[in-house]
Length: 74
Image (cartoon, rainbow, N blue to C red):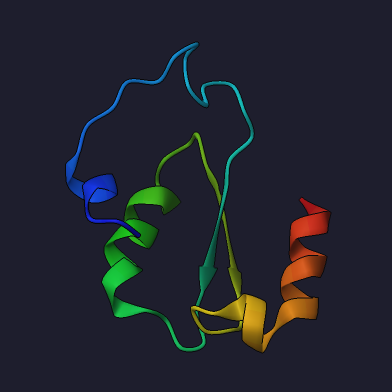
């Protein structure tokens, strides 16, 4: 991700993603340590659903069928 996406600010037009279904998929085998705090924050955010996939950070490369099945089930 570009650095500015983490440190910059922006304003959503038309309420952004308010009201849309949002699901965070955490890749947990192995877990990417840099994202653990994001996992913890999103798990308690009632506007998100949280699920995991037994794959590494590049699941689209290492577990494409499993990832595709999960995405199509959402």
